[in-house]
Length: 289
Image (cartoon, rainbow, N blue to C red; front, side, top):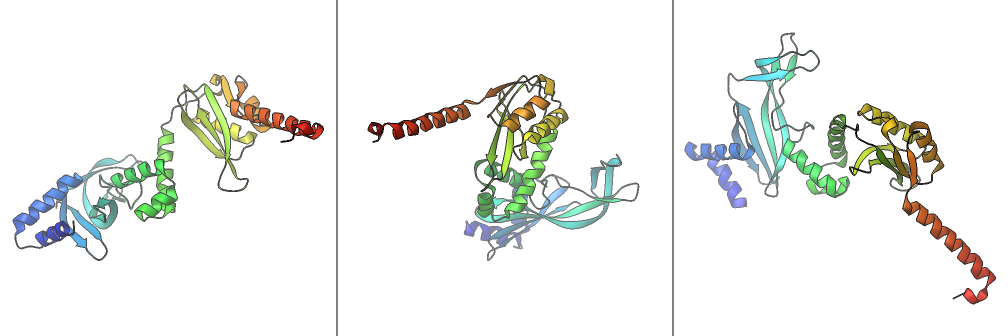
């Protein structure tokens, strides 16, 4: 692998321009770089074990931009450019970065806007493919562990997850939800709780919020309405025997029939049986083991 990297860098700076250009085109194909973008150069930093890929755009190029706030859109000539950097998927075991001369365009109202290249992710420092890797890893292991593996702070990873979750939830449609499960769980150590609301038919999480009081059910009812749901269509809710949940369901989902989940019922039965056993042991010494 080190031989290949040295071969790449020596080829790029070799006077044999033909070989260098072929190598650059190879990286363009591997990265799916298309006009007006092109790979301008490649640098491998051996001591840092890092590969930098320089990307530029052709002179005279125009870029499409749509301003969401004003509605202005069109193909604009380049006003100026700034250098931007994105971390990409590793090249073998070495970190890889795309470094691009990124154009800015001037709109008819005089404002200047930065063009977002097609490989840019929601986080300004990662490519879409690298963010896809992060999302897949975070589905299967703790965020802190993912951070250690890819050498990035877990705070940065949480920000990426937050952006994708917010974007995904904006598109959620709860209009067909009719049966909901509610449960609470402790977060970290101590008595810091979060409540979870799930669609029992589609097996998906609908809503998560801090706390375990009746206000959590009220918050879920509001969120349900914001995603095309209807509280009157909820005909069944499964939860534990928490008075707070029962009150919240009665207030926010009056049409729903409450079903107590079997795990909490069995827990109460076992606790009752154990209490009776202890009393019997005290009264009848023959029962002592």
